Length: 116
Length: 130
Length: 107
Image 1 (cartoon, helix red, strand yellow):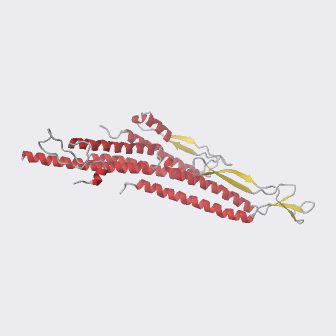
Image 2 (cartoon, chains in turn red, yellow, purple; image 1 turned 135 degrees about the horizontal axis):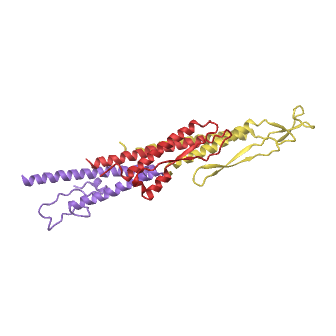
Image 3 (cartoon, chains in turn red, cyan, orange; image 1 turned 180 degrees about the horizontal axis):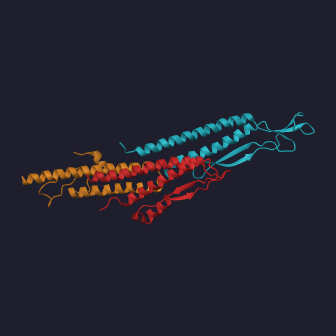
């Protein structure tokens, strides 16, 4: 009997991986807001995670996140970082991370309560 | 995610109000532009906004004011034509200033919405926590 | 004694089983669907599983970005945690009482 590979654990772990990567990428984008020629990137893990949940392949393990180029308009110096969009994403992913890590602690607290 | 719609909506408002403020600042800065009669006068920018179908607001277009300007008699001006006429920009300063105040209030209100959204999410995350 | 708060959470109060009458007469709990203690415990566990599954489903939604409200998940998680604690407490008390009774019979 293995608790570590329950499907819900893989789901939550994949989400945390994806969100951590997203926060790193956003910080990178914001740091390069004035760099000439810099193209912003974004992270998508939600679509592959939703697909893995609906077809059941999440039981095989975690889902990896993908990095995609962002299609915001390019400015005159070749830079396409939209500061407002990145700030919004930073706020949203922070709350999402807090929510998912709460879900992880709640899940293991539940197992601990039952195992008393 | 639908859970964070409030943040996204406030963000669209920040963007729209920022565009509006930029246009107003541009109009005010160019209020005293003078051009010769064979050129267009400075055209004021008027930002039009519309509601987005999935919530929030977006700039639907930036209309340009009249290129006629105000024909003024100013014979000593270097750009004056044979009749001593120049085109002055037709910017209604009082209208621009009052719009500036409205746009600023709108922007501040959306900043407040953003803060409120963050407080709301933090509270929701604390439910059931000792 | 009726503990209305616990009933609202879906548990029927504990009714002491009557020794020696199980074959002819089943003691009825005040509001439980099944009379004997074993049935009551099983009902409670089923309800608990439902509440836990709901919380888990919402957690998966939160992780995959399809949750509509944060409080949907946090309330379901709180409900699952409290229901689990109640079930564990009832189970522990029942085991305690049973062990006590068994000890009485032998002694």
